[in-house]
Image (tube, rainbow, N blue to C red; front, side, top):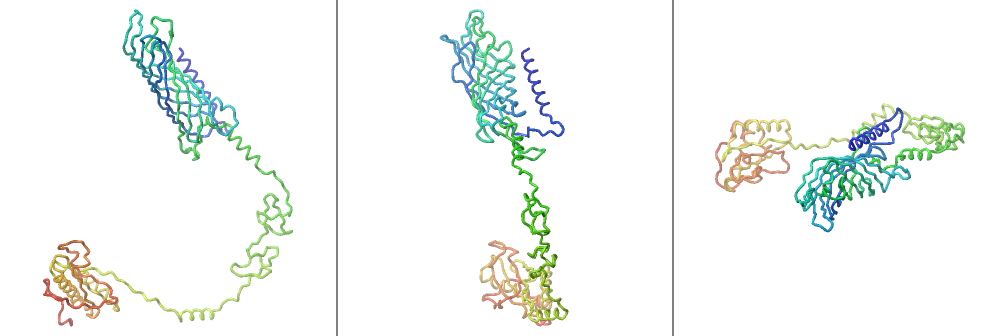
Length: 486
């Protein structure tokens, strides 16, 4: 019956708070979106019953709290506790472990007095119900038949009622520290068995044992932005003055200047917003009360004989633009001729990108699949008859240095002969260089197709290199012919 009364009481309070929170049309809510509170609590629980408590016990848990308004809030709490009891001058002992979850209504008792924007100390009253399960190991407990018994009581899941009070100290908008004392009273036929002794043959407590839990709670405020307004959520409302928004609005009204319609210079702009209180009589002014200067030539309109002078010209004392005589066609031609007389086109040096030509191992013969690359080089040279091109041969690192120098020379020579004989490029436009196994593209010690190449670039100050000393190197044939003159 008691559980039903408590449940009905909590439902009544919740419904009343819900109706109170509804906004009438045009009403400004004083309960903005606020943050949640997450708390971590720990303390020294003890049981008041038929046996004396043996200190210290240990307990701890978590809670989540959400305000309903600036006075009422709801809290969901979980608790684990372990404690011991002993008889007075006898051998009775017990050890109890308790686990529970509770729903609590928390009342900020001192937030009814509205004297500060935020509370630094909060006085809380707590009432709630929950479910619990406890296990008690007991020894030498007197039974109804007069015997002493030891054993373990595995309690079934049952409900409980709890009340409490506490103080909370606000350190910052994000954190506070709470000191609380709560008392838990289990329901059911075994509610007097928390300490293991159910008063089978004594005149002690005959109804139920009580779990007392003094504890500290470290609490953090969590929450981002309000989804409706995008504004940052406020601190939990039980820390805030419910009249803060009203006070801010009143302060803003009090800070507003008293309306004064005085217009000293009679320019239509009252002195309170006039930035030029003593404007000349009959002078046109802008919305700030400043004398107009429409063409911004530093001559006010009431003195300006030309209020809208063309921009870019100097003006005289009367504001008239000093526009020069219009320019004639002869003037234009004379200016252009003078400019062109000293005009020279800048010299542009083009650094062409030429494709490479690659060779088989130990060969300097031009492969058929390389004809396209040589054709492209020849077309660029024909389109640009003023340039010379350097052809530099290279090898991979599979032979000796002297042998590779001669082979790289032969490869450059073979490429040049092909351009001369097949595409008609003048020989004096091609400069032969060789590099042997230097400047490898691929860092390979042995044979490598990419490194066996001839590179081409537009000549600068390079000169042709003579054939290096050493015996003939490589296999292949040159592409020159007498009919082509080479």
